[in-house]
Image (cartoon, rainbow, N blue to C red):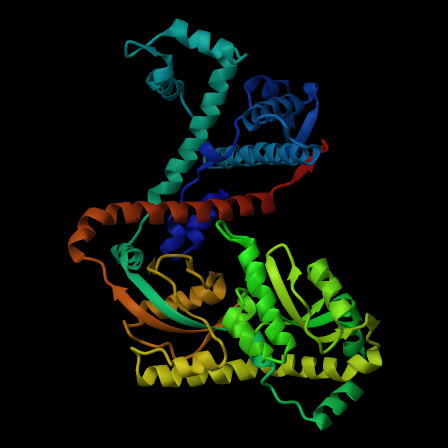
Length: 495
C-alpha cells in the first residue's frame, strides 16, 4: 500500500481528506536521456535504490539557473543547487509512489495530451513538424521529451487519485465566508511598560535586600548600560529663547534687534521662563525654554561655547546659531566623568525591581481602564489614559479572516484575540488586556458589520475553492514529509 493510500485510510478528519498533490507545479521534471544512462553518467543521488543521474541534476540546475537570472552569489548558487537536488529526489519518490499504486500512462493518453497542447498546433490542429521543431529547440529527441511528458502525466494521475476524496463541507464554507466578510473596527489603549516604571515605589529596605541577593544582575546591567549611562561626557543644562531666522522672508536685522531687547530684559533680572514662553519659537517653549540636560556632542558647538563663556547661573548675550538668534540661561555644567558601579548600584537595583514589578502594575492599570470603560462604553476613560500618557488609537476596518489585527500585530496571541472577536459585539469592551510582543492593549469594539446574506450564493464557490487550495497545500507538506522520512536517500554531490 502506498504512503498516500495509508494517509487517506488512517484519517477520520474531513479536513485532512482534502488531498491533492501539486507536484506538477512544485517539482522540476528532468530529461529522459540522463535517466536511461543511469550510473554511466555518474550519480547525483540514489533514492530507495534508484539513481538520480548527474546528467539530470546538471540539466535541471542549468534550467533553474537560467530562470533565476544572473548575479547570484556563491551562497545563493549553493542554495539553488540544494533545492534542485531536493526537487529531483522528491520527484523520484513521487514516481515510486505512483508505481506502488499501480499507475501508468498509456501511449494513447500521452498522444492525447500532446495533441491537445496548443503550442504544437497549427490552425487548431496538431502539426508533427511544428512539434519536432519545438522539441528540437529544447535540445531533446522525441523520445526524451515524451519520457518527460509521460512522467508529468503520471504525477498528474497521482494528483487526480488524491483529489477524489476532496470534500469541503457547507458548514466550513459558511464559517469561512462569514469570517472573511465580517468587518470590525477596534479602539485600543496601548500600555507601554515604560510609562509605569517611574511610578513604582521601591522602599530603601527592598532595594538593599535586592542588592544583597542580586549582585551579578547589577554587574551585568552596569556593563550593558556603561557607555549610555555611566561613561558620562561633559553635559549642559540650558534654558533657551530662540528667535528663528531660517525661514523665507525673515528680516534678520529686525530679528537680531528683537533678540537683543529680550536679552537685555533677561540680563536685567526678568523671569527667563516667562520670556521664553512669550517669545521663543522653539519646541521647548512648552517647557518654558528648558532644553534639559544634554551631552556636549548633542548641542550646537556654537551654543556649547557660549554656555562655557557665560558660566553657570548666568544669562548669555545674543548667540547666532544655524536656526536663528538665541539667548541662553546656563543652569548647570557637569564635567565628564565615569560613574563607578558602587555609585550606580542603588539606582540599578531600583530599576531592576521596577522591571520585575511592572507587568502586574500594567495589568492592574489595564483592569482599571476596562472597568471604567465598561461603565460607559461610548467614552474612553481619558482621565486614566492621560494620567499615564497612554495613546488611544483605532485599528481601522479589518476582517475576521485576517491573520493579524492592524497596529497590534499577528502571531498566536493575536490568533486567539481574533477568535475572541468572532463573538464580540459592537460597543463591547474586552474583559482582559491583551499582550502582544511585550505590549499590553485594552480593546473595545468600535463597530461591527455583518455580511449581507444575499451575496453568499454568488461568493461561496470562490470561498470553497480557496479552502480546497489551503487543504491541498497542507496535505502536500505532510505527504512529502512522510515520503522523505520513509525513504533511503544517498547524496553523492556537494550542494
